[in-house]
Length: 86
Image 1 (spheres, rainbow, N blue to C red):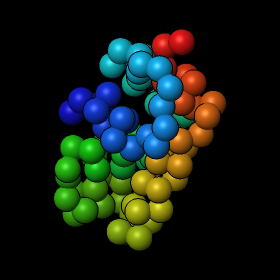
Image 2 (image 1 turned 180 degrees about the horizontal axis):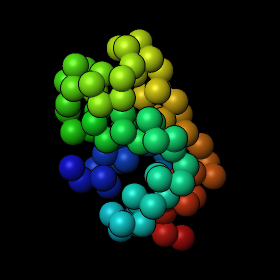
Image 3 (image 1 turned 120 degrees about the horizontal axis):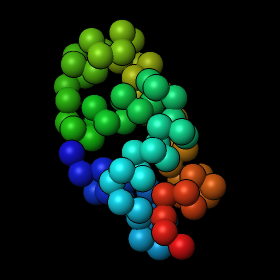
Image 4 (image 1 turned 90 degrees about the vertical axis):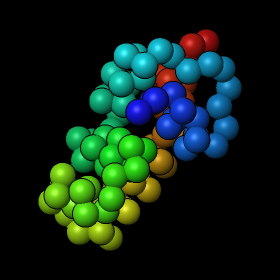
């Protein structure tokens, strides 16, 4: 999975260029909960809902809530500032 492409497809408005893959992973680890990170990565890898359910032991509705929360966090200005090189 290319983390840069995944982030670009989910961030509404981005000013600047994203950092390299390793730095992006570190920022996401700091900003997301463990479940948010797992669900975000699994969704971006196009895993099935059944695979994600098994991964985090939650139902489909909760998985969608977690994914929405992760996308919402990605679009917060302070998180976006940490993801880009200024």
